[in-house]
Length: 556
Image (cartoon, rainbow, N blue to C red):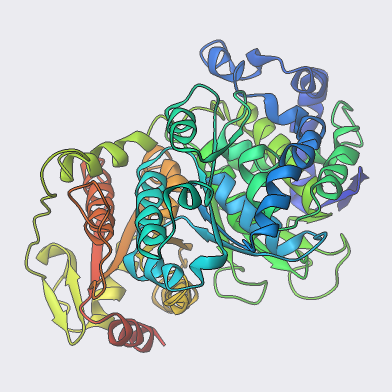
């Protein structure tokens, strides 16, 4: 059986047993008046406890219209930046807006000169050093948000510009600060002369792909913002409909899957052309739904041919394609989605909000994300205080360039790196998952992402029921899937990968370096995971290049 819902430039195709399950939920959503209530911004849709926060977080529904003013607001500054030769845009920020900006720049059409856009949502000193070694004479830094990563990177680039010989006035014009009005970043920006861009106060980062925080850096890099918003606006016109509403159909499919115990959402791209979009969808699904011991775990795989796509059991597959009837592998998957980028952003925002109602969770609350942040701060003592203290215990196993940090009993006598990795896979409970969390250089050590398919393939050979394997870059994942790791079902096993720092970067005005901050973030999150009873282990690369090659070889 197949159900196809097409409207507003989006097609959602649902096949097999998913049709009956989702149609039951879809009928209930329609009879409850959810489509009209949601588009009318009824904050009570997720229960009375969620209503106060929801009332301040539903602005994303109007972004296809309200964001249209952004190009005009940025026209003057953009012309000034181009005139000064600033065509290398570095985004210093984390979470949904940074990931969305990257996907927009990689996917959407651009007008005028095509600027370079670099998303720097990391504290890895090697990655930051690589960006600093680029052409600072062409570089404009867009600071998004007010977390420790954004604040630290702003200080680092400030010193770099100063050391490059820029005057105080020239340095001030090299930053664009994107934040809420009345916030500390705005006050600081105005004091020192940075250009300030005001963001919406009723949109949070997870649901803000069409908001100012994501669109401002993309627009400065030449993205055709009106075209992107027009794609979303076409879909916005059908979201009130109880039927022939692809976003409601997708929300019903996601919600019914979670209710039915299929709480792993395998996301695979099959020629959609939406480069970087799965990473954005991952942070939305995990963060909005992973709490109160419930949720959907997004498992982003490289393609429909990759290890882990054909998992059985508690899995729902979603394929992002160019057409709803795209031929080839994976066509039998439960759900396929096709449509342009702007509409996809709004589609998934709406669908996940609907799925949260079905699942009975507050999509806008993030009750567990602060734990790792607080744990990191404790390890650092404070940003204003003494130097950080991180206790380094001896490894349980050393294999050439790789240290294995785990309790002796967890290794169960493993003598080699390959045996240790197999014990971690074997420790994943039935119905659970393995999360690989790499605190490395996303650019220079991109090969680390290959650990996911290799571990998935190894797990398939070890276990009767292979386990889902996810991959995340640290600290990016803390703002993406971190909420699910700590607030979702307690069935994850976590494998961190850290690396020796050979070129550290001091953070001006702070008693720590980026390398120390990165390690504190890794240790802080590990400490929280262990306090919640989640098994969390760490591989440390004593030499990054040799250690990574050794890991890949041990699995390959």
